[in-house]
Length: 417
Image 1 (cartoon, rainbow, N blue to C red):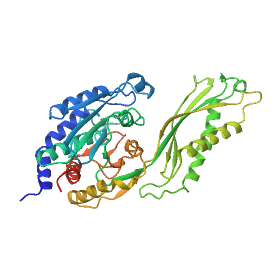
Image 2 (image 1 turned 90 degrees about the horizontal axis):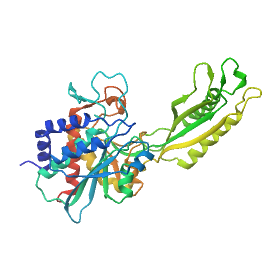
Image 3 (image 1 turned 90 degrees about the vertical axis):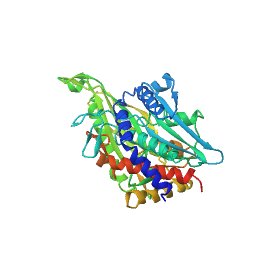
Image 4 (image 1 turned 135 degrees about the vertical axis):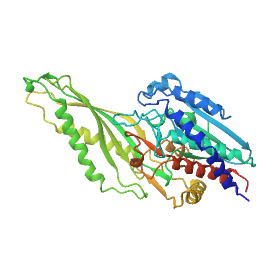
């Protein structure tokens, strides 16, 4: 006699070609963020889900809120499957937005090409793959025809890259969902229970533009910005001494990822903009981190010496993003235990519970008291999948096995005793 778990596995194997085609269709609709015109992908996803008998509620975020968040269009989706009263509701969240493909691809970033047992394309690994894995896990669960308690929701959201405020946060704050537990898109070889926070600041350095032939007649904003940059980067030596107690997370880190400024080659720059990213370990207080960075910037600006008679530099600091760290809630234990048990059975190896230096949408659920974990289809590390790099890809066998683990986990939590 076959067990329910074996029946789930068999259904997923029998429908795996369909799952892969579904993922290819998701990859073929671009969701580059920026610019963040993501409503067309939501419409296509909802249509594809409808073809499987899964009705998706379309929740369009008002244009003004979307624009304020720096995007162009967002429609979030919720598929609700209610089985009976008395059980828990489990949400499965995957985001459809992704960074632009960039250069260096040898495969079409929107092609969903398959080669060597891998599927290539932007968001193939992060995280359109888990729109597919979660969808087919739900379908496999329902194929059993077994009495189920509680319910499951599929959340497809479109604001992970810009912080989630018009994605999961918007759905939660509008009262459109309040699950008891949740699983967010992740990788297959570990279940993530905590992650770093992230603070992003925009620093504008104002100097005094002048002709390059008479540089002393102005104040070089780029030299001022360089002085501030050096002060910021010196902080990383101190951050190396701050260690997290969460396995998988090491220390804080600061990076300046974008520099813009200047007018022309023969002009002393009058304005330079720096955009910095500060990763915060779970033990840090975001307010203290931000206050400390602002002090460092102010002190560096004050210590910069302009040319004789030149103007002092003026600095403006604006917060772009604040994502708090995800701290594990003890009540996530049923999720962790089920994923670890079935992950070991399906993958043939232990699935550790770890932290990650990334930040994700799942924190938005956890901040509101909803226990969550990060688990889905993908390799052991971000680097292996080329996520956010050229030739992002996913090993199809990881997609197949992760779908089985999620389906088995749902059965554990929603199925008959």
